[in-house]
Image (cartoon, rainbow, N blue to C red):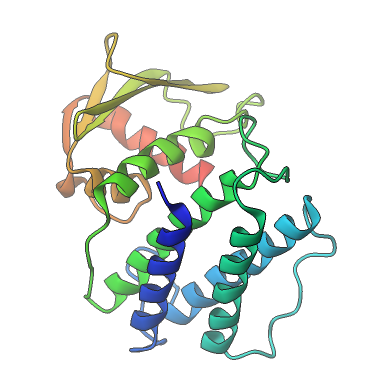
Length: 240
């Protein structure tokens, strides 16, 4: 998948819709306006430019971006992240938060999903939602399950959603089986074994539901709905 092309296309659409009004409220991010989303994404882009430059987390951080108008800053940051990803390619060693991928390929993928989710935010704010590429949505389901949810973050049991159950997600013929308790989350490809609940739906809707950008009315749930809600809560903890 050409994640860099998705970054280009999705970031252009985000900027286009943002220009129709920065003051609009963002339904999926209570208290945020489109302006907040634009500045957040610009900050993320600049941070990842520095990560790719240094191969490590930048220090000091954050920098002071208060003197810049939101859209000018966003446009510059968008150009900079595209340039940085292009220059790094997909094989450059760098800091990431994935135990399985310490290369720049991780950031190609992560920036594509960062951008499409926040593109949806600004589109929802302006009632102008456009489709998500189905293959990108399927990859996004995979990415939020690992490393975002299934990484080694839970050893101390620091969660309000201990779950202690197994959930399956299925979209477009692909399945993921996720077992979780207070101190671990295990993500497996496939549909083997018994589960407490299964979530199914269109890839884009499952993807957006996982990211808190779509409600339960957009998916189908078979099994224990309380387990499913706890599972979504655990994802919200992992993706903050």
